[in-house]
Length: 143
Ligand code: ZN
Image (tube, rainbow, N blue to C red; front, side, top):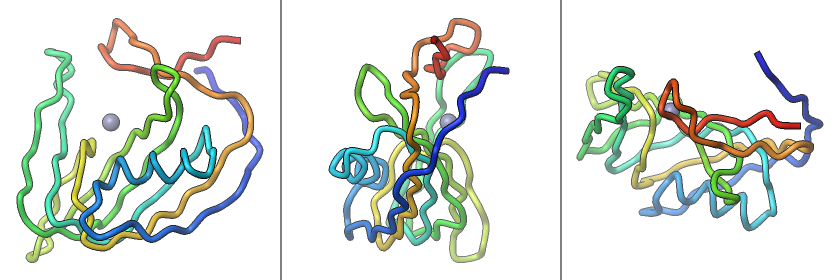
């Protein structure tokens, strides 16, 4: 296992805008604050969402369409670099009116109301690069 240690930077609380796209809003917020590396969580509700399940045999994402209001029961992610640009990797557990949950890799979601808690990490900037065994863009731990 490879790892990198970080010093903690600023900690932000941010209200995401009604009707904004959640993943893009997190990236834009971080970019605006010049945050390069971070971990974050989001709570709130979305109007609709697209989750994805990664098919490990086929090396492709299967999309899960959720065209209805949902609670963000849990949402967490990290921010690093991909193609030299800030990239958010986000997973979420979303709940419907009956409390039934849907979970997976969050591609995008339309914000109804959402609160972002973001911890800036100070240190090495990790870049994502294509990894053949998984077919995913994973962290490259070069020195
Ligand atoms: Zn994922």
